[in-house]
Length: 403
Image 1 (cartoon, rainbow, N blue to C red):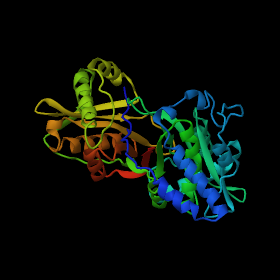
Image 2: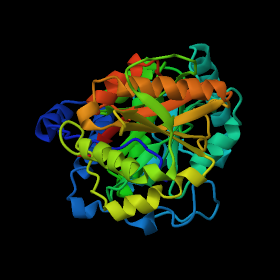
Image 3: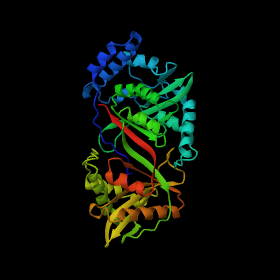
Image 4: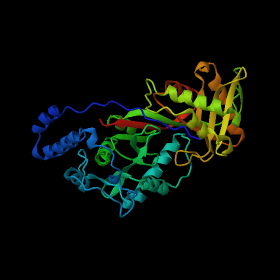
């Protein structure tokens, strides 16, 4: 059974006007010019031909991660060496940015704990007491993970860690800063320097698609990511469960193996709706046989609970709940709304509202205090529907493509 996940919308981004910037650099003082030349060189490097930036898995640490002492690392270019030796934020010369390592784990865990405390104080539904060091270790322990830290007088003020992951059913790979992969305190402008240091390595490793999950309450950090040409790509959200009766001439019942073909058809309808504008999901169409095999064991798996909505003795929608999610963003007493869809002809008739009310009530009666879900910003129907059903954002997924 496939769990519905957030997907990618590739952004078309412009490059800087190098001729204009070169003229501006010529007017700087010698010390300023050295920094500006370095920045210009980095910008020029991002314009390499695509075949020069293809992912080479041998350069992504092989099977090692950044916490292994013997992790494989590619040879550094002169530009990388200059960055890694001491990357200084230009706005505050007493700060430096350096590669993330084991030595930073404890400080990073403390930063993450304070971020989480702020997040919970906003009323956000999250895991109440995660193991913050374990969360950071997991982010840094993923294959090919790399990152950077902002250090002020020996104290870590921020970190960012990303790792390459396949993008669902597209054949693409992107560098993902996960839910525990980012924590930052202080001037949000310096987050841009932190990203610049980490992204230099990512691009040299062939990763030109970057994704970051940013806590929704930290709007100043979201603004900093926007000013790095990231866009708002997806939302994770949660709400409390409750019994909310809704009458719409729709009957909702438990799904059974007899609903296999109807479930596959609704799954295909959802995937088809994500391919055209404005989503442009890039997902390849899957055969009916492949989907039938994927769905066939759903009703035997205790982690899944399937519901179908019927109107006039015909299945017009379905929803799937899932208990297998975990991690810092998942409340201990929650269940995930992993998939939900309505047949195109029935959209706008109350089927979705009936399904939502039913699964929220069922989860409440089963002792689940909250429900999580997610949606793409470019899924116009979902991005308008779920907030109206009471789901509140927890993280904003931000995305950029270079170029």
